[in-house]
Figure 1: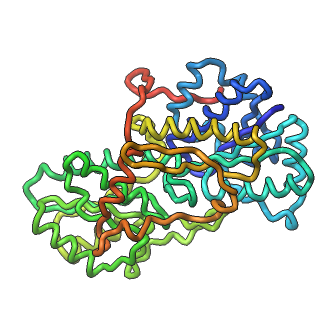
Figure 2: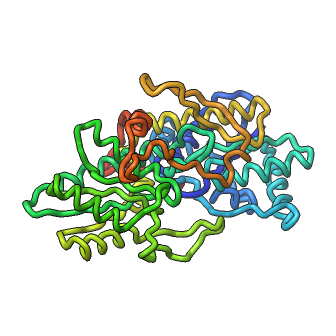
Figure 3: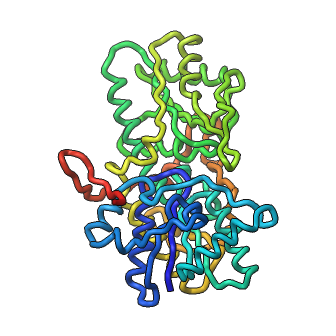
Length: 400
């Protein structure tokens, strides 16, 4: 049998590690012959743009280099499969591609929207009486996929964000004047990544002093009071805010949406900067952590990379067991010691759905998170991997 794998959605630090997991498990499975990579997600299947991964990943060194390389080496897409009744031809193109290359299992590494493709495509193939299996392998720095305890890519993004905020703390503390620094962090509707900055408290940091998440209604008046209260205690106040926080008094919406209807966000940090300058009048700046938090492999979490590879490998085993239309998931058994197991769940329980940061993990004032959140996050950022360097910079695997 032959298999195919594709990557979709926004890039992460760990998505290529999941690709390595699929590829490595295929090499260890005698019944699997060719492993095809689809260029630009499901679009590569539709257009029959496949490459034989054995011709480009030739050595163990290649696999190790790919494992440490951020983003999607096969390229990505934000293509939404239409309902079958609206465009049956696109499904026929996919089936023709699978049959042409004798592909019996397809692995889609992606987030909420990518699992929509897993649901639709597996339903189509079952309806046609095909035995081709479709398995979703999760990824997203937003950590907002339902069912799974967490998602590959999140731990490394959280580690990068915490490290960056810690460096911002050091920078902001050198002057004698009072200051406020607002750090805007990714998270459209779910505040997981912003909340994860609480992990700095493991190293005796008291900042960020304030944490605001989209799961809690935001009040400008209360925000100003919160900042004033922190300024009475600390010379340099650090605020972590999710990009998805809605400020009714300010227009922080772009009005532009992607193919799945998700609005592009920006400007919350700058809006809060202006509010502090207007209402308090101290030195203030805002910093937007944009794409940097998605692909910062130089300080990735070993736990994250190892788990990303393992869940890719388990996806292949699930397909060999006959499972289709499923998404692989983590189930946490313990925080201390940290123990997880890998399972699968019907992809329709994940597709087009979001898992929000638990309300019980937000403090009563709505400006910080609880100890339970700290215990959840800390294991996910543990460990470092050896990064191969050249000329003082990390090496990345690139398709020739």
